[in-house]
Image (cartoon, rainbow, N blue to C red; front, top):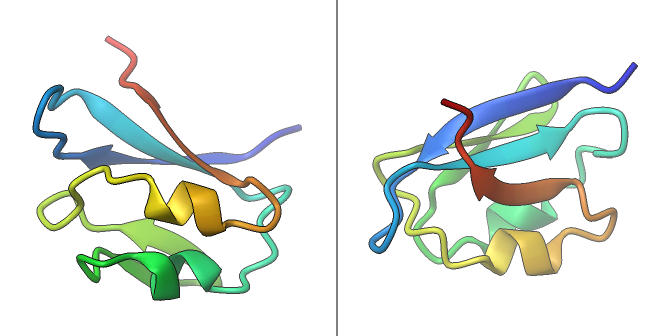
Length: 77
């Protein structure tokens, strides 16, 4: 069963985005942490956690993830 962590993202053109980290495919490499120009991602319990106040939803973390485990998607209502 897929485990998903969801964190709110402040996006300039759409404030209802959510970063989703797939814990089943995330290897905890922290590449996304290093790729984030806003320093909005920290490792917590071996997985990335996005700070919604700092994240600008630039997509750098998504592009850097070697396992494609972090995605931005519309927030479920």
